[in-house]
Amino acid sequence: MVMNKTIKNAMEELEDWLSDPSELGKKPTKIEYTNAFADEDGINCLVFKYKKNLLGKWLLGIVSESGIFSEMGEYNQKTEIDDAKRILEMLKNYWKEMAKN
Image 1 (cartoon, rainbow, N blue to C red):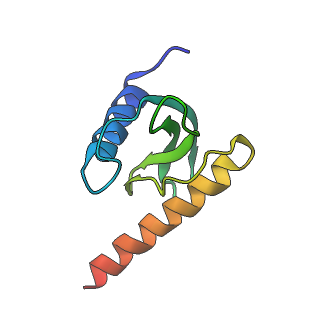
Image 2 (cartoon, one colour):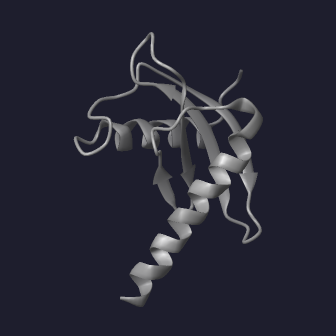
């Protein structure tokens, strides 16, 4: 798959986020772009799957205009968009709460 600059940059952002000691603590062993969507508010979101280690399960992560996040939950191709939308909603709600304070 040819990777455009947006996807490549988003993948690097997710790797950096995962490398934080309070997250995964290191770059994932493997990471792949899987999908993209825009939600009802027009927020663009890129979906990735990654592995903590070579023999580990694929996990879901997102990079969006509302932030980068992963619950370190298992990646499921059939539900990836719904799973990513749920994480995106959580991020949006977090930022709305932060704006209130």
